[in-house]
Length: 128
Length: 205
Image (cartoon, rainbow over all chains, first blue to last red; front, top):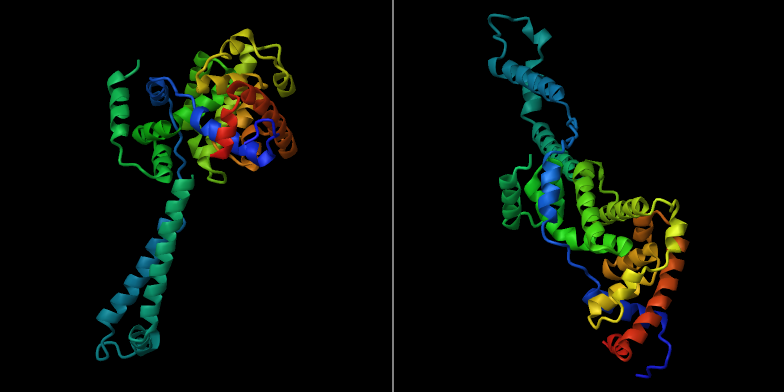
């Protein structure tokens, strides 16, 4: 190659990048980590407390509602002892709903929602 | 009082630390994990040292600035929201720390434009003439103003884009481009003179 020829910008970039990659890095003296750790150990870092996306109270209310619903279905009103309960608690409707595909669909949706919740919480923790 | 056993233990543990993922390490450091922090320092200490040395041009000052940089990183990591790459954020702290050290060392200097017009010292020039290529690169960079030398290092060595250099330095994009263009031209003049035919070999590779 003609040494007298002027380098193009691309060639100059390539030459400098090659040179810097091979010989541009300096070595950090030994012991820096030790001193940084000694200083950092005495530093109080503030860990941000991020509230969960779904508050614990909401989970408690949801669990209570489900619990009440299940109790009603499992115990059920006695037709002989309380004949008028049918008017208060529509048992046949609740049983019909629970045996339909809707509860399964609901469970799938809840599963998907919880997975999304866990993913977002993890991402937020990683990204700060 | 420094707990030397703990510090030595943390460094030893970091060398065997299972963390291989930077994002995981950052998350662990945010929880106060010093082993993960030692692992992160191991990954970036030479890069940070190189960047601050290009500005300060003095091993002792560069070491101190590197140390200050990592202490700041540990304290402020929870502020890093992930809107920029961790390395860009880290270089930004390193660069600003180095500039701050330079201003302390040179109290009369009040703005970055003045830093740009700094002529290389006699000590800087002593490195020139060495046959060692690393020293020759360092000496060539010492011919450039401090800010330009660090920009060139970020661009060619750390392979940052112009946009990332803008984030790191806080300078305008056009200013960064002008400085890169000017520095490239100047470096080629110096290095072609220093390496003669060897520069062409590099181009040919």
